[in-house]
Amino acid sequence: MSDIKVIRLTTGEELICTVKYNGIEEDNLDADNVLLLEDIAILIPTQENSLGLAPFMAYTNASAGLALLQKDIMFVCEPVDGLKKQYQTMFNHIVTPSKKIIV
Picture (tube, rainbow, N blue to C red):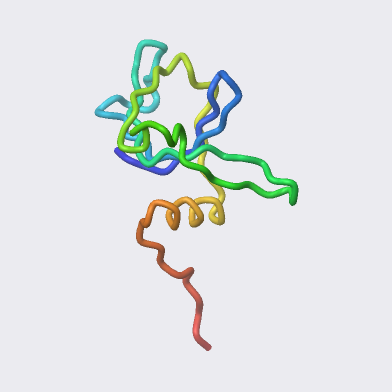
């Protein structure tokens, strides 16, 4: 299973990334389990009350893949559509236009 998620770490950092549960059931994660993350960006608040995205640990190869212990995660949630599109654009994922009804 793979999906784009926002992850809040116990350190207070918030990441947006593609999470690969690696065969582990999402409902059954415990402190010893590891989540595999790809295309990781950190969320940075801006002065204009919006969010900016920056590569997480840009001085490393972390965006190619990173294992994160479940005990280091406070919560995982779905990003809003605008943030998800910004993330997809940043990592050159295919972005499709929103559906519109032609009248």
